[in-house]
Image (cartoon, rainbow, N blue to C red; front, side, top):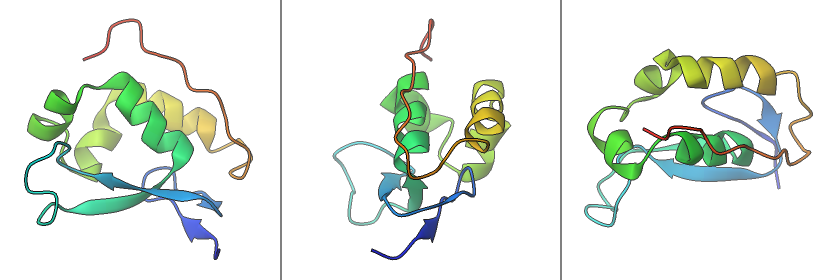
Length: 94
């Protein structure tokens, strides 16, 4: 598999996932997607419910603007992109 750059943390990694900017079962075929490393993808879904992601955080810019995401990105950019990291559940999930 060819290394790819994560759209959120900008790290180059071998294992990537597809994130639907509007999560849910409806309109999956017409939904815009982005390629994320597994660490960023898991962290987003740990921090925010699908409802919040669909209604409020449905662009990369809005995701990046969240203080919790900014803190995670500052940390994860220092980590080895090909090593799976453990993500923590937020104390208060939005």
